[in-house]
Length: 367
Image 1 (tube, rainbow, N blue to C red):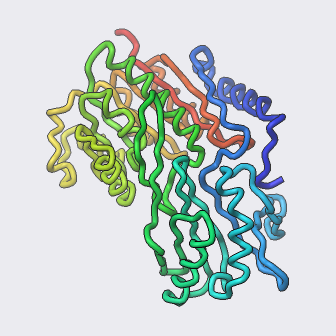
Image 2: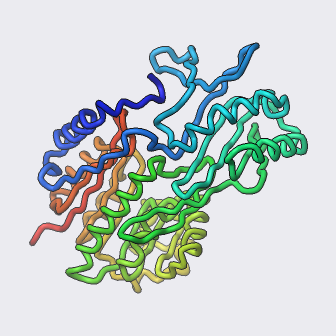
Image 3: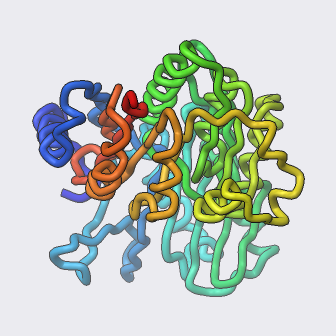
């Protein structure tokens, strides 16, 4: 059923993912660490359609086999307990208020391990801002909600702010991360902490042999850059999304990190810049000051493009976080011609689905 969990079958589905990954990329099998998710209440983010009947409202999801028929969701044990416990009390109060109820199309939840809750109400109609703000204020006062947003086409109303601050931990350290509503965040926060810990473990091994600066592509909001900053001498992190770059800079300030520079550039542009092509966005960055021995990539599902894949092969060490084993396998066909796998990991970010995330540390083969 939609939004349900099956703890008794969790280990079996994890074993199947491991088999799928190692069948696709046999070279990962000997050095593979497997990180299991909590079997329930693992998502810090959830989105639900709201279905209206003459009698009531209900949360709805749609089965791909019958996409026109809504399936009522009374509870969602995939979601963290804070979201799961908030769902019905929230909808009950909304149902009693015409301003909040009329035209409501979707409710999105964003929660943190550190205890914040942000709820977004999305409408098919233009909102009366003052009436909605007054109603939303009363709604928030009666529920464990920190931040509330109203959205409709070309309209976004904030009760106060559009982000939460997450605190993620690894290696007895903690970092603060701004997570903006309607932007990408790691949905499984426990697994995100495992990913940080694994990346730190491999990075310490890298710098144990030789001091290194780090080049990171697709840095997002600085998730890995910030957690690895104390291991590398300097970090140059790049990201194409303007909002993610702004959030990364916010996060660097929150964590008082001064050895990371974030630049708004696509991975392909970074490759060209390293070949000597001038970019205005790199005007304040002296690439000659960096001693890059390590590159960190966390690309989208499409994986690395040809130019970036070729650039990565020039580095002594490659740390690759993948959200698509098929494109990772394709990229490794090239990278394993010059490099060998030292460590690999499977991160079960999305239990009970075909999705899996993985990590690989590669080092250049001896000449």
